[in-house]
Amino acid sequence: MNEKDGPTYSGPTRESWIDVQAASIGVAPKILNWRVSEVTTLSDHNLILFSLRNRKDIKKLNRTPSLHTRKYATQAGNWYSFKQGDLKHRRIWEDHINKAQTKEELDNAINTIWGNLEDISHTSFPTFLPKAKYFHGGPLN
Image (cartoon, rainbow, N blue to C red; front, side):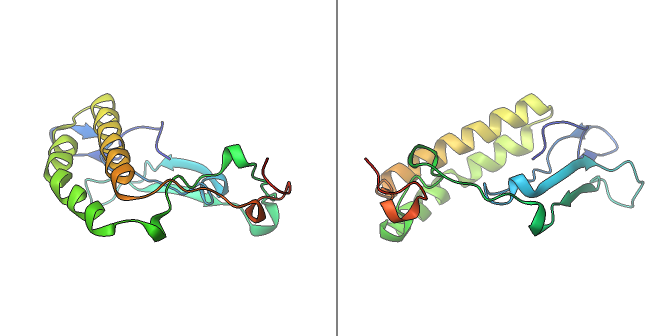
């Protein structure tokens, strides 16, 4: 969710965008007015504020087969393999994040982590193939 609005951490020697807020595809459209607060607190980390849409304000999203959000069949996968891949990379990921001092460096660290997670997932889980019953438009062609 953080793409603008200033650093989320303001310490004595530097500022950073270290606090990352992620949202699933189901929640992201509900988030409004995401911002970093200017209110002074006792923490080095700045408050992140946002509003959520009311349930009645959210329009039903009709998904099409080409826009499904699930890539892997995690219920049929090898979770042990996934966990081992995660453990193998965890310290490297932490180092990337801890060394990031600018938004660009943090973005690069996050892209590296996502790429590694994609590789780990690809080797641990089969590809998810949606069934026609999951789509409002009828059977898949």
